[in-house]
Figure 1: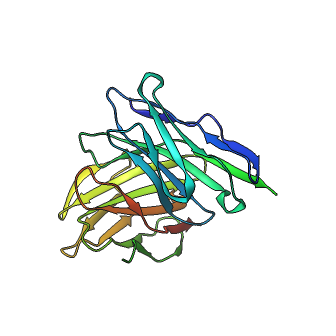
Figure 2: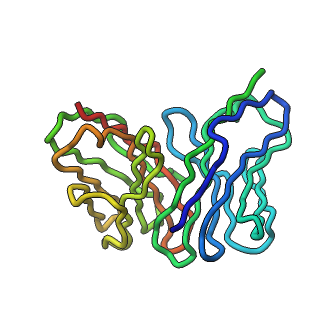
Figure 3: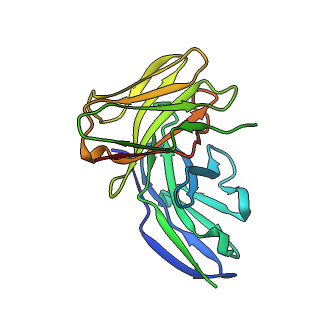
Length: 114
Length: 112
């Protein structure tokens, strides 16, 4: 069965420090991969996506993610975190054979220390 | 360009009642998706509508149903509400098959 694992439930980083959020997926082929962010009480905002091609993808707000097929991973990174980045981050996968369904990880809550 | 809109923002019901949640997709988007975000259960896929037809549904009982209108807006109906239906219900839309889903702000349903 398809699944997404975000190993870190909660991460705290200092403002200005670098950030890496981990995401591993289990899927028979290369899925479509996404990172979304959710601020408290809000919907999900798309940060970036990977469908094919260059394995390093750039997103909004200075985020990037790297697809590593050999590790079944799609980790999210940011070189310098801002206080406004505090939120919950979700990794998601979708089947290239469209079922319309996004499968989400459990989410990682990011806290930013001043 | 306006994003996905959902109404109401909050809804309070009692057990056994019915709830109706509404979603308007981004202009030009024909697919609408519904997800449930319940405490402790994460984000779960509920339903997918495209061109007025139900294309796929998640592992939810039949009392969760919906429809898509000719203008591509959608309704989610939850009958015979149970306490565990309390959750944030998120709607998303996309241009069609294999396209990125964009989410609305959600409707928070509380069942008492």
